[in-house]
Image (cartoon, rainbow over all chains, first blue to last red; front, side, top):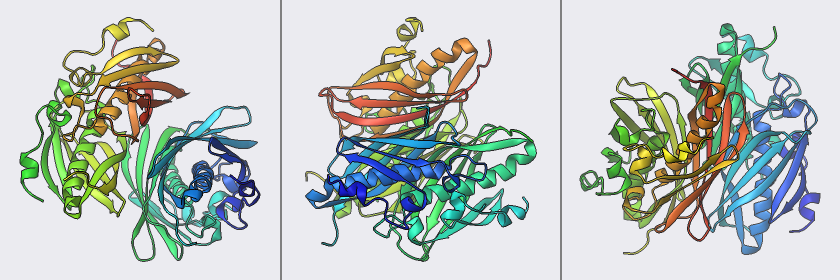
Length: 137
Length: 137
Length: 137
Length: 137
C-alpha cells in the first residue's frame, strides 16, 4: 500500500477533515488513526459524540480496504457499522486500531477499538464492507 | 418538550454544527432531522459518509431522549449504534425520522430511517441509550 | 409464494423443528411465525433464551427471502443478525412479525418484532441477507 | 468460579441441552464452548443455522458473567446480540471462544469467535449484558 494513502488524507473539506481525523497507518494487517477531543467531535455536554467513533471507524476501514482491493479491480462500500460506547471521553486524544476479522470475496469485516490517552477502552466498532467491481477507470 | 430544544440546536462548534445537522422536530412520538449533502458530510468520492448517518441518528435520539427523561431526573447516554447503509447518496438532503421502539426504565431503543429527496430509504439505524440518574444540578 | 412453503416447515430434526418454531405466513409483504414458551426455548431460569429470538428471526426471514428470490435463480444466505432483548418472557407464546426494509440486488434487510401474549414488545431483530446465484439445479 | 458450573451444564430440556451445546471452560478470562454439527443445529440445507451461533454466544457469555457477578449480588441479562456469519459450516464441530471486552458497573460486552475443525473463522458475535441486582435469595 502506498504511503501516498496517508499523505493524501484527509481530503480538504470532507468529513474526515472537518472532524480532524488523522490516519496514521494503513496496511493489510490493520490501520491506526486518531482525533483530538475538541468541540467539533463532541456533543453539547463536552463528551465525545458517539458519531465521531462510528465515523472514524468507517473512514479508516473503508480507506484501507479500498486501497487493498484496488489492485484486484474491486471497490469497497460500507454496509453496516455497529458501534458500542463503553466509556465517555472529554479530553486528550481518541486513538483507534482496526484489524480485519474476515476478508471474503464479497464481504470484509473489521473490528476497531478506541482508547483514551490512558489506554482505557472507550468504544468498539464492527464494520462490514461489501466488495464490488470498481467503477470507472 | 419545549421549543427551545429546537432553537438551541445546534450548539456552535459542536459536531452537529460542524456537520450541518438540523433538528426539525422532537417529541415523545419521535424526532425529525436532516442534513444537506455537502463536502463536510461526504467521503472523498462525494458520497455521504457512513459516519454522518450514524452521527445524526445518535444526535437526534440522544437529544430527544434526554429532553424527555429530564423531568424524572434522568439522563441518557448512548450505548450502541447499529447503522446499515442501503443506498449511496450524493446530492440534495438526507432526511431522518426517529421512532422510539422501547422506553424501559434502564434502556431506550430507537429506530431511525434516512431517506433521500426522492423518499428512497438510504440507511437505517438502531440506537440504544442507557438511562442513568442525571448528574449535577 | 406457494403454500407448500408453510406446509413443509419445519423439516423434521432441524433446529426449527427441535425448538418448536411455527411459520404462519410468508409473502413479499412480510412473514409471521411463533413459538410456545417451553423448556426447549428457555435458559435455566425459565426465561426465553436470547438465542431463540435470534434463531426464529433468522429462520423466518431466510426462508421467506429464499422463496422470493428463487424464481430469479438466486439464493439468500444470512450475513448478520442483530437482536435486542427488551423484556423477559416466561410463558405463553412469542409471536414474531417480519417486514422487509430493503430489497437490493445484493442485500436484503429485514426487521423482526417479537411480542408476548399481551402484545408487549419483547425483542427486535434486524437481519441482513446476502443474495447469491443459487447453487446446483 | 466453581467447576460445578461446567458440570451442571446443560440443564436437561433447556435450549442448550436440546441443541447439544457443551460448555468447556468458564472463567474471568473467557469461556470456551462448542456444538457438533447435527441436524438439530442446522437449517434444511444442512448448513449450521445462524441462530445456533447466536444462541451459543448468548449462553456461554450469560452463564459466565452471571457466575462472575453473583458474589457481588448481581445478575446479568442479555441486552443485545450482534452476530455476523462469515463462512457456512456443514460438518464437524463449531468451537467458540469468548473474551470480555468491557466489564462496567452496568454493562458487560463480550466478543465471541466461532471456528470450524480447520480453525477457520465462521462467525463472530458481540454480546452486551445488563447487570442488575440479583433477584430472590
